[in-house]
Length: 114
Image 1 (cartoon, rainbow, N blue to C red):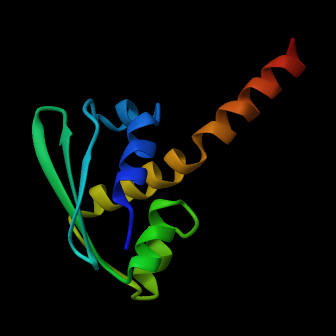
Image 2: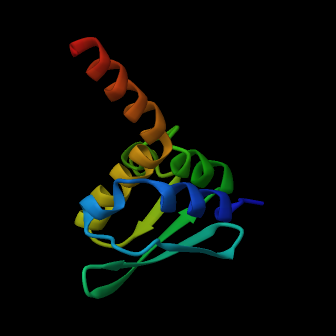
């Protein structure tokens, strides 16, 4: 079974959420084995996005191993939301799974420039 609490904590720790106007940590829930629902706040509004598909592919998407666009194009998962939300969550999943590596790379670059 997909462990959404791990991904919820990982994405909640990401420093990139405020860049996407998400001031409060999003809440992840599994309606069933194949349906992931994300409730979040965007500015003053409550929003919901829903992903449906094989738990293996949902996990790969949340972990940043496969892009949401690729999974949708190959019809491995379904997305229910707007195009803007899809692009936002694709970026959030990728950045949240790689933010520690990105920040380490920025620090190394900064040290080299000093």
